[in-house]
Length: 456
Ligand code: PMP
Image (cartoon, rainbow, N blue to C red; front, side, top):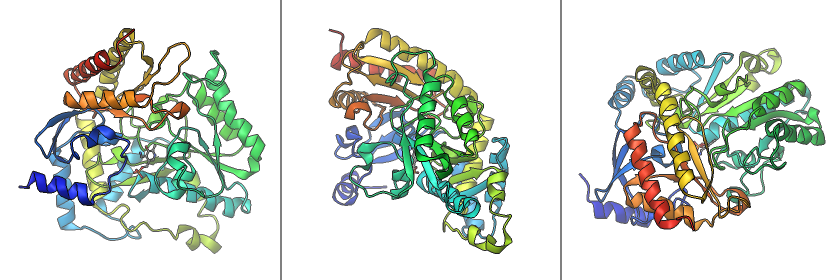
């Protein structure tokens, strides 16, 4: 029981909200979510919404109100709630085993509590290997324009979104940016080999910096918050080849795509590549507990074991709450749901259906410049003119998202995109979504476009 007006007042007076770019959430003065079931959530005022972005930031992969996860967490907590990961615990061991089964070639799991922290661990591994193996060389980490890697200062240092970074400098040294791979915003015009050319942009930066200074490259499999940018054909193969050529570790940030969003366990698995490190967070426990993982190959782990003189130093790392114990208990139950309910298959099938419906919308509204995505992760980039590709003003996607919310459907917008404008709508429903729910969302979008962006 709660007093809705009091909760809303407390929230307004004392809670420092995240991501206030999500303006439609503020129209409800402010919006306080009190309940969720399946694909739907309810706010303090009793309004019901179909959530097409899985908790605003593509997290609740198995949907709301999952009792099996809540039960698993409760059972674990009353039995054994906490002991640092200097010792092991049952769910952490069991989840690591299950996770590694889904990731051929990978071997070790380091637990922490957020995507940012998982990425920081990967960056620390690169720095440690640089000191240990290369006398301090190979300490730099490359990242890509438009990719996001987290909220801490070093994760932001590795983030290619100037608009998120501009007020937080100075940044951690040793992070170097290379150009994005948006085929729609191709740097080379309309060419057949765009994917290879975009990957070669990374090699140019490696050569300019000096290959013996670069330890790793950190990339999202699909750039998420930076604009739902799917990789062009041939891109990943070339990236992998370049990494091998210069002895550079490949770190894939699966914080968004991980655990089924794109129809495979991990986004990178669509492209036949073999990363050295993979980080994940949001979908690991679908938001039922805070848990993230930095997963490495045995070769990366072994790099710390071959020097007995400083062995202790290289393992002296602790995340107080990492891996203990609600997180892995929730993660195990979450993975069981994905398997028992064939949610990878549903994500693939419903993703294809969603793409088809979004293309139909694009046939109807010229403001839709590009439709892209993979599995249940899709974006519509909005432009004033299909020829010039000039982005729409930020007010349009905000108004479209607000209009959908009035119709009871929550959709997303990515962070500011190219040309300083926030012009991409995004959709990332839970993996349980049905055709009827996708239709409800597309109908709401259709109404919003008809009202706000009809063809001239
Ligand atoms: N990497 C990516 C690709 C993300 O989208 C995010 C979160 N939006 C993060 C890392 C950071 O995760 P967290 O917010 O859990 O620190």
